[in-house]
Image (cartoon, rainbow, N blue to C red; front, side, top):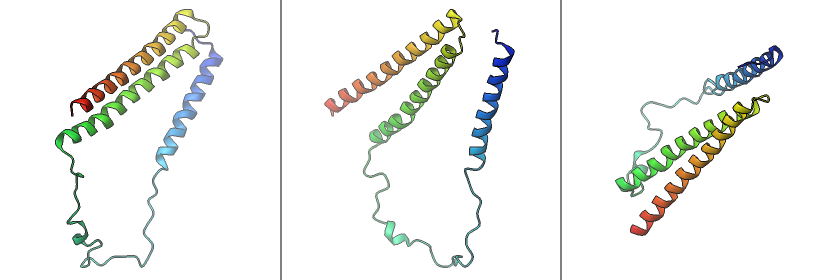
Length: 137
């Protein structure tokens, strides 16, 4: 991969500032502040009375099937979205940095097209399975 020296310098500067910004956002996202004075709780008195929570249903009446469905909804679809986003970014970077190289531009476009087809296939299969299971309920 041939890249002029000036472009390499700009690319390295961009990566340095991008990852530096991510580092500082992650570094300063939490604050380790001390509690205000005079706000200490006595160890003998409970902070929250347990009687208030006796009638609370922890799972909102959910069956194991519902919990597995929620797990699939949340984790697998979010993972699929993250993978699709990664492929879109990768294809976009290939396409935008092709610098006139038709082979690299074509590869970037193919990555974008197949990422779109894959996202459509996964979401439509999820919609179809959800629709069929709702009918069978």
